[in-house]
Length: 125
Image (cartoon, rainbow, N blue to C red; front, side):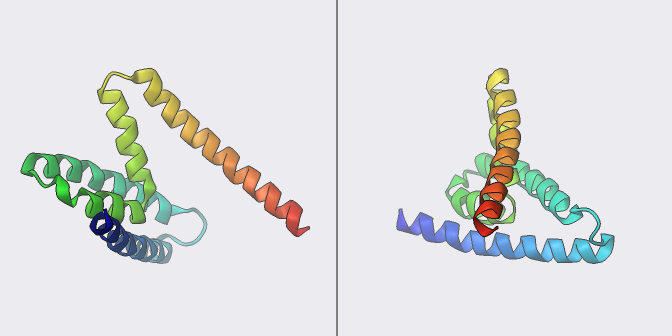
């Protein structure tokens, strides 16, 4: 358990650093008007999650999943894990669950953000 936790933590540090560097690089290229860095990180992270889940399963390397998938890609973007979870539900034929998961995660995530901002603004006002 502790080895897996340390592995995830180390991977998370790498992923978070990669996310920061991606945002800086994309902002320099595209400018600050739109969150292109987030778009790039989410798309790249989802693509890499797709590659890793197949390669690790095919090569018997799932023991590296905590470091690579949860740590590195989780630190880089949780959107990659969200994408994998949604598609796994879809592949299992759980179409309603997959749709509910996507709509619920996005909708409730936005609601949580808006609610948190309202609470913080109320407390700080």
